[in-house]
Image (cartoon, rainbow, N blue to C red; front, side):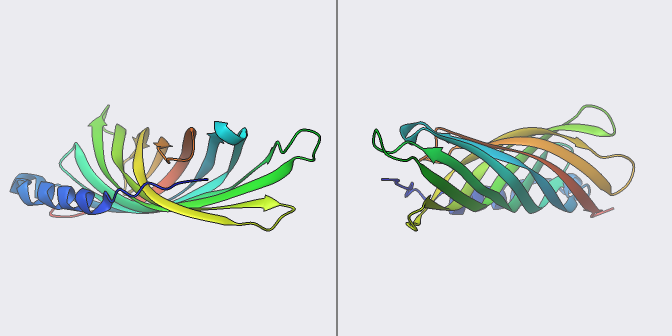
Length: 196
């Protein structure tokens, strides 16, 4: 039986983000940048208890802002796709095809470190509110579950000289029922400088 985490962290993450904004010096507000992006990639996860492992096409949309060179906040939606695998049934019986579809909304604090004028290393830590639906075939038995869990990741952001830049990142999602779950994406971002 899959159990979802009952802890509610998104409100705490929003409060933390608003507090950081309120304390930011005016000089940093002058360097604020608002951006939006679209990304595609690959997600994979593993559930050892049922010997399940699979991968799927993933996509994401997100909005965020940075102030100064080092700190930002980002909110988005991730569709992890539908992961399929065959799992063992009772000895001597036919195995079952198990499909798990998952999506979620996330809010993260993003740290940046400029490697040079065009390339930034990034790291993020936040929470994801996820929903998952599993179906066993040939039996139409969908099982829906949801929860709040930690999301963290690292990546590289190539900014170039204009408002369009490209980000490649890998993220690990600490979803309770999975032993390992990560997603790798490449995103195109358009930024709007503010206060300049």
